Length: 414
Ligand code: ZN
Ligand code: ZN
Image (cartoon, rainbow, N blue to C red):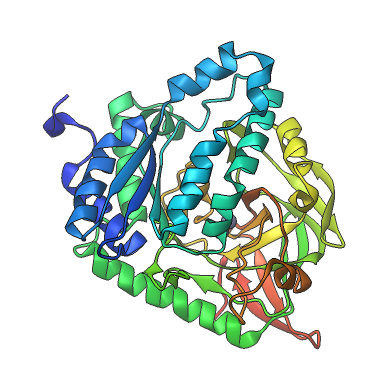
């Protein structure tokens, strides 16, 4: 197929690559770039490499994932395969990050790839991978280097989002939704991102000035008080990595977020969107917290996977993130369910199970013990799920118990 008849507009795809490099990574001259991507995303990866070298990249190294090889493993590999991961590869990633290599992940894989394989094998393989990836992942969650995730409108993903459309039309529709969400449809996308980053900074600044002790979420099936970590800081949009580079880790992004207190979450909450977790769709999640810990959990679909995830380690039943997103965000307004956290989390307020962002504290460079002492959670998982909708109200609760409206009917209250 030539590019002319391709369902993805090549000019917009090129702008997406430019935004990923200039806004997402803000790649520094001479910096190396490590890219991971599904094979299908090669047209975007090549454009990213072009813009990266134009920006002065030293070396761009792509690592492609192949769905066919992944499926072959689950179908044919012996039992010994599922507690293993390519440790050497993840060690090399950690070495690259230590040497100040920037990290970009192109996201667009088949969300349902593993839907038909044994969930016990998936869980074991994920656990092995998670553990092998821990040193490299810590550098990402500690924000040691500039990193960025950027979407690719993959065919299987597009089919899941628009099951009633012919394949090419589904890809075209997803591509246009991605371009809108990433502000690629604006006359000057790089300038539009500067404006958007300023607005997110204003919202986080307001929350930081209030110094709420907790947020109280209420809505259908939800009455949840999320205590915030001591000395927490709200962040959103562009932020400065520890290597000094101001970058936008997520393209798109609509959230302002911070670190909850791992022991101060009480009440019950119901998910407002399905969670697509490594090939399994988990629907209608409902959980109850006591003393920060999930003591009861259910789902109408994918419950077995959810319960396994909660047993990953000690921190998996506690919160590592709380994030606010207005219902009027462009992603929510698209009306699409993307089955992809990068998009769906930016359509709604969300919480995440597991690892916290140690960067979300006012006094910066904290050790692991200091983060834990302030209530920051530690886990090998970090899984966002959506609890916001146009029916959710949020109050900020101050230390002395007074309440300030933060969200009303899914929108900023002021
Ligand atoms: Zn988030
Ligand atoms: Zn998150």
